[in-house]
Image 1 (cartoon, rainbow, N blue to C red):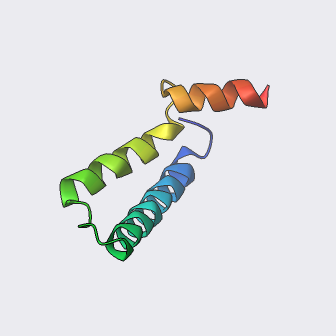
Image 2: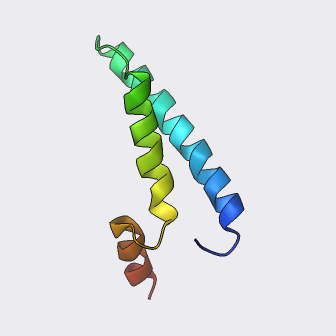
Length: 66
């Protein structure tokens, strides 16, 4: 993980919670059922994994910063 990985991991967990909340809100507003808990967990895992060096998005962001 990155330097200060613990704080970054906590921040990403917060981001994932907010994303899940917003997605469910939007789904409900448009008459769709909200995401099941397992789908919310999967989305959270994908968002939190962005900070891992092997993650393709991490790699893209690292290359962009150079």
